[in-house]
Amino acid sequence: MGKQPVPKFKWKQGGGTGTLGRHLKEKHGMTADNVHVGGASDSVQGQLHGYFGKEPGGGKPFFYNRDAMIDGFSKYVILDELPFNHGESSNFEEWNRTFMQPQYRRIPRNTLKRHTQQLYYKYRGHLIEMFRTIECWVSLTCDTWTSFCHEPFICVTVHWVDDDWYLQKRIICFEAMDESHSGFNLKTRIMTSLKTFNLNRKVFSISLDNATANTKCIDYLKVDTELPLLIDGALLHVRCCDHILNLSVQEGI
Image (cartoon, rainbow, N blue to C red; front, side, top):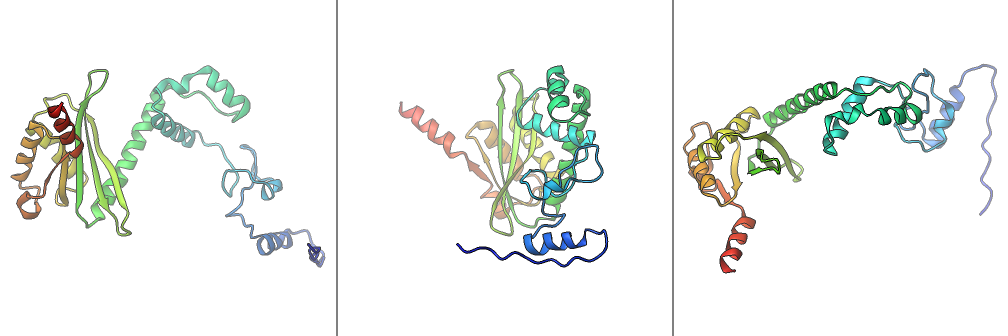
């Protein structure tokens, strides 16, 4: 390979950094918005070496914000199914202060719980607004079960195809269900969730296990005046294929 030509620069009197900035932008495609500027948490000015490295972190100096940190820690605890006292560990605090962030302080469980609830209502509000604006029909999947701790739960998931023809899904109800899992109670829970998220006039079908209570739930939904249905609800009930197949196999065995 031949030698690369050496660019020539013209020096002019002055102490500005405009020439360097233009060179980085025109010759290397580097701007403040697309490269990482390194900097300690307590510094105001970023370090130049960040332009030439590959450090992660985005294109702006890092500033430590405890509230933002707790919000991020809350997401981490939720996704990894960790206890709320995870942030109270003195060993975890020492490791963070020594190797990551000297300003870090342990997070009391009540503080983490409060931030988690605030995040929940924040994203719940985003979902409500999003579902308010969509104009397509949606389908639901509903299931109930009992955990290993003998706690009953209900989950309602919404499925729909967006404007770009991608299949989307969101959980609109994941709650403890201490009352009897009767058809009427299931119908009440489903309708409450649908009305909360502005979906009660956009339902196409509901997938449920092949259980008597679920069939009764569908009967209640079909006559609910707040749930207008296509073809008088003829397409509403979709029975879970896996559950039917399992029943067939068990019967054959």
